[in-house]
Structures are given as C-alpha cells and as structure tokens.
Image (cartoon, rainbow, N blue to C red; front, top):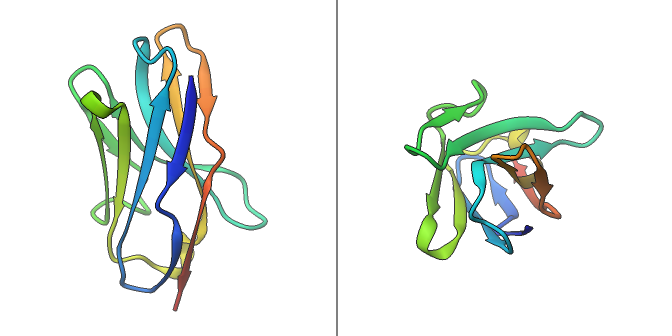
Length: 116
C-alpha cells in the first residue's frame, strides 16, 4: 500500500486546513486509517482514527472538537479537516493505515505551520 498526503501549508492561528491522503495498492484489507503528527523535537503522536467498518472515529483530546477525520471509499482517500488551528498544531502530519493482518503503512508526511 502506498500513501500520499497533501494539503499542508502555512496559515495563521484560527485558520483552517484540510489534509488529504490517497491510498493505492492493496487497499482491500485496510482496517483503520489514522493521522499522526510530529512536532519539532517531539515524538510522533496520534491525532485521529477512522475505522473502515462502521466509520467509527476517535480523536486525541488536543484536537477534539476542532479536527474531523473522514474518508471517501470510492476515491480511496482520507481527509483531516482542521479548524481553529493553533500554533501548537504545527507539525508534520502523517497518514497511516493498519490492515486486518496488522501490517502498517505510512505516508511521507505534509508540513503544517501555524503562526500566532
């Protein structure tokens, strides 16, 4: 499975961005699709998850109420709508999927920079 993110950029605090992740290859066995992020000097952290079966979503407390994860199965795409961005949201955002066989795949990341 190959993952490619897009949609990052530089914005002001309070602005919005929408990240996209396109999956290609053997996508039939995807179990969850996830977003992670890594800020400078910090460990990579989980942001949000959407399950393929049922579409249940979960969010990190730091983004709950501001970020929305969604997917378009017809396009094999996943999105992260980010509203009310804060400077602490500055990070490289990574698309991640986990298959039913527990294989894990990562995208190359897309930079999000929020200026206060």
